[in-house]
Image (tube, rainbow, N blue to C red; front, side, top):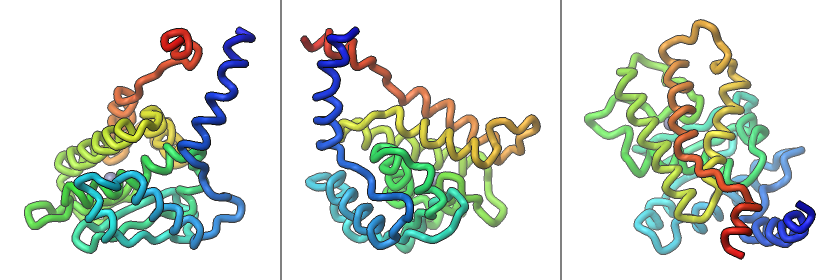
Length: 209
Ligand SMILES: [Zn+2]
């Protein structure tokens, strides 16, 4: 076990330097987080089919304690509330938030044939919607996040870990009588767990070494 810890330390330091660190959260500088978000988009989409679209996205960090993020595909605009940032513990979790919103824009979830607004990871659409279509759009977008995390070498478990925190804060997960709207969130969490590929770092070292 001791050998494992000794070997792990440089790996963790290396991983931190490659994957970067999130800006300071206390206090949250909206300007700093906007720049950070923009830079992340560049890093994640450079040289890919999404690069051009990512460059057109307007990102707003809103001072708002509700843990929401959202996007408008038609405007190529997205927002993240400071309340959502407060729940983020690492870069992979934050990427899960912004790439989810970007995913709604990539998949054009406010096109003419769709009446479903891109409500964000916790944002409630405020008009009457087709719940099953909305759920499909959300799960398609969640799958998009998993793909981008994997392609860029990030921990695919970060998506459900971050999402679970939102559900806990909102009380959806432990609600004895969840509404149909809340049930969608709980089902999404279960699907996200399936995206999560766990590998014990010690196993990884044994495997590669
Ligand atoms: Zn969404």
